[in-house]
Length: 295
Ligand SMILES: Cc1cc2nc3c(=O)[nH]c(=O)nc-3n(C[C@H](O)[C@H](O)[C@H](O)COP(=O)(O)OP(=O)(O)OC[C@H]3O[C@@H](n4cnc5c(N)ncnc54)[C@H](O)[C@@H]3O)c2cc1C
Image (cartoon, rainbow, N blue to C red; front, side, top):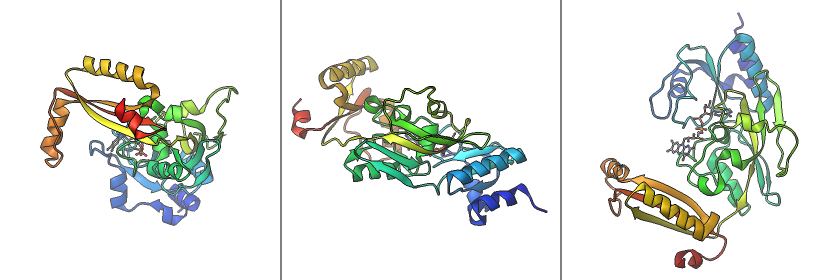
């Protein structure tokens, strides 16, 4: 008898339908090990058309769908529930860089590209893709978009919501929303992509995106500054913004407790001082490093 999983295998090819218990167990556990679910299988589509066919097959069979990228998020939304009925759709095979346009400062990447791949592609044409997270080697652009990821440079460049010009996604009826545009002044109608960004996969499966690139900074200055309270940190932030404007790229408030935990769990990582609070900040500029260091 043919099951609906046979039809899933028919869509992605038997090699890309995974039911091996170890691989399945890893995909059913979140990054922090706090949430565990169960699923029927993992499907790894190779194209937007295959994602659309998978969604239609799941809807017809009444099977829940869990899109999954690098599985590095922290709130369990990439983990199936414990009904054991879900199909996990992993985008790992969809890693094409469809276009890198240095003239327009844009890049169109498929959702399964890791963040590091996109950063490298931008650097390859002398540009910066500014989203940066500690998980960048394994998190994927689709996951970054679905969580509206921010990262360390959010102060200067904004989260994924502000870094995205166009989106391609498969909607719950299996149709494809194609708004892959690199046009900055796009004032035509509703901005549907913003509904999908930050939706954690509830409104559709993101398959590709057109992202903004920026000039690569030539000078960087980084400092760890001791402050006595969050109010002092805020005063420092305002003073730096008044002096440097958007050359202030990162500004992270770190508590003394955090540094103590770091010292306890990573004995080799010794903080230079143990203040009640400190700020890790970064300045970037297109000119010479001396300008930042003297300022
Ligand atoms: C060490 C570390 C540091 C981190 N630092 C930061 C940080 O500074 N800032 C920050 O914002 N986050 C941070 N994160 C969290 C995490 O890396 C981000 O949330 C990341 O954007 C998740 O990407 P992912 O591919 O792993 O998504 P997953 O964990 O696989 O999925 C996250 C959500 O997106 C959905 N999803 C995944 N792919 C798609 C898709 N193609 N279409 C639709 N929905 C999809 C999933 O269903 C789930 O709801 C960090 C994580 C780690 C482990």
